Length: 228
Image (cartoon, rainbow, N blue to C red):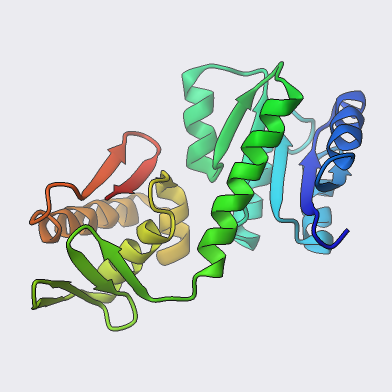
């Protein structure tokens, strides 16, 4: 059991929840089921899972509210939304809330398994690395010393610049939701902090402009991604 992926499934359709739990339980998963958001938060505190899969349309506390509350407990646990809601604004809102992936119902169980394993795999890579040094194109970034080096030239970064760049490096190639960055670094996601984040992103883009292969991409309405 110790090598199984601990998954928290939050789904109010009990029949579907049981099918998912039974199917994944036969594979490489240890599944804990909660049938609403409030129970989901309690189960999360008890189990501290490797990954969370949640429905959106639930009574009492919907999936968006659940993940919003979850992110105050953990900024790092990967979250996948399951939902029949397929409108673009729902997908965007899911990422803004702190989700890492979004799978529309109905879905193939094999696709769910692949997506969850991918999320957990990326999360383990992030957590396995305790290094504070990152290679960003031709740059060497030392998060501990808050410096960015390029061919012997060393640029000192502000504490905020270093924190933002390290968070993007830890999730290299993934969209990091704006809301998650704000809550992780500033402690809240007010409009004024969002404006400050935009300023720091602009500064970091300027500092990294010497290597055209390195980009901080704005996924409009969702967040930022470091491409290198």
